[in-house]
Image 1 (cartoon, rainbow, N blue to C red):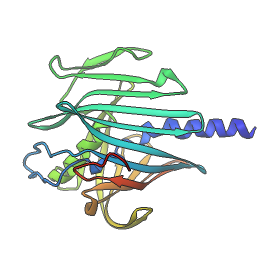
Image 2 (cartoon, one colour; image 1 turned 180 degrees about the vertical axis):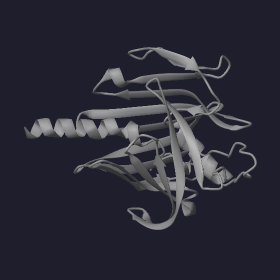
Image 3 (cartoon, helix red, strand yellow; image 1 turned 45 degrees about the horizontal axis):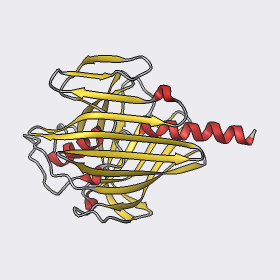
Length: 257
């Protein structure tokens, strides 16, 4: 019985990594250039590594995140493991005159291949598709479409560029499992946060989607160039939390931790 509970609970924790870490972990990736509110030109990227602890119902695991250069493009990857379960994600991203945009998103877990994703963004043909999905899909690609990892870099770029509206809101449209979901992000104010890495003055954000009972709260530290240091998701009686453990955000990334 205990073994069955641990298996089910750990499956829930790993399965939730992709579902609710839509805006987490990636904020340390960019340089110090801040764009003007009128335009959002590319903001310089720097390689980085970070580790976060994710907790749910007494269980916890460590998620590792890395941004690395691959030729002319950037690769943002994340992996997490607990017991016999693991989740791996990777996004290939390019920089353009108008900002960052995704080229590829891959998601794989060790429990159910039916949930794996191989999303390809074809900006020449204006199509986005996953031909390897259990039910292959394809539809027209719009300028604001992105994936679950690339969106995280884009969020920080929008913060630095001052792209929030007069009411402190922005929207992001995420493609996942052949579905289009639009999320609203709003600034709630400033708050001091204590973490394993230290105490930080942060900007607090709230992310939600119309018709959903789920709310995600995000704390980003300007002192760390808007690195996310804490996040919580509340949905009915469930509560997920994330906290930073370690980060190397130097432009010249060390080979070893």
